[in-house]
Length: 411
Ligand SMILES: [Zn+2]
Image (cartoon, rainbow, N blue to C red):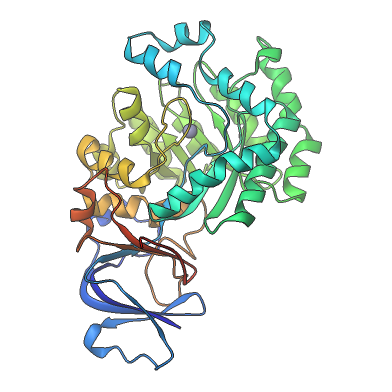
């Protein structure tokens, strides 16, 4: 048994998905304590009413705020290599097409991942996950998608599986072989899809439990709506829930497809239109926004306010990847959501807990603070969550708990 005492502010996020204006209306309790038993929240009440047994462990929050453990529901954390040359070229004003022509872009990462062993991918990702934990993150979704051969995609999924066993953050794996068409299949995208979507491949992923979700980059330069539909329909037959990289650069109807196939989430949405908003509402998909990506690229943000006003459940994630968002800090992405998308701190907390949990189908267990739910909690130094997000660039995490276990403390 463990009691967290002297909590300055407990943000009582309810289980997701939390829609629209409800995202900004979350009750906060002051001067409270939380008792954890068997990995679950067992009691929430006023400090004065705390009646813990003598052998109960105590974690003093020293007046700090407590949130549900943060969930980064869209990342590409398993990768090799780095692309700072591309970063510099972009600053100098070169368009992506030219960068790709000069040998940059996603191919650099694909090459590096193909040349790395599974063990090397694990070694590279471990310290990234450790730093995420230090940032208050207790659950992370990770996609494949830099192997782009059946064997290399399996290697990435196996690396994610190994990482789940080696450190405390809970991982959700997504099969993103349909990230782009690899060079060997240039001008033959359908042949590539034949290879990565064969019954044998998808059955192996299902039978070995290597992924829960299947994602596709639905974009003019990647896979069109028809091919993306094929990807998600094939994966669904093997129990993989659909996700889409949708409406990022151009508007080709990707969110309409998300609605049509009942995708669990549609991610990016920088160019979403009213048809896309209606489709997501109808399907009950989570709108996952990636403010650190637009910030890193210096482009327009997704219309968060419009999506919230449309009563959609909005989630926020880092999109951590070596090309368009070398940002592994979810708290930094959260402050960017506040200042660049005009989401309130409360909305952003809901977007990275309850709604992020819903985007990876874990909302009945994590992402909320409620008696009986898993005790994944983030303890801040700041007395309230707005104060914390108002100070980006400094680590304000006092402690992180996963299933009631203390997995990180700041000292
Ligand atoms: Zn992404």
